[in-house]
Image (cartoon, rainbow, N blue to C red; front, side, top):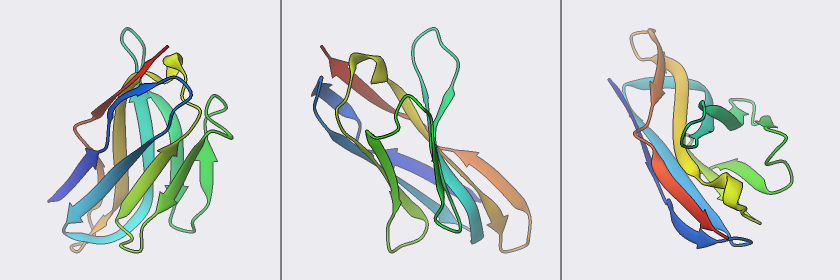
Length: 120
C-alpha cells in the first residue's frame, strides 16, 4: 500500500506566498514522478506541475515563474512553493505519486487534497 499526504494549505492574501508539502510512504520501491494538480469550484482538475525522477520539471503556463516544485532529501517528499499568489489560484491542491512497489506493481495514488484560498 502507498499513502500520499499533503499539507500546508491555508488562507493568504493576493501577492503572498505559501508552501505545500507532499509525502508518499508505504511499499515504495521507486517513484517515477510526483506532481501537483488543483481543482477550483466548478472546474476540472488541472495540472500545476510535475517533477520526474530525473529532477526535470514541467509547469502549467498559468503558474510558470511563480510556482516552483522541489524535492526534499527524502526523495519521496516534494514541495510546491507558490509566490505572487492570485485569487485565481484558489483551489484544492492535490498531490499525485506514480511509481512501483516492492513487488513491482505500478501505482498511481492521490492525496486527499489541501485547500488554498487567496483573498483579493
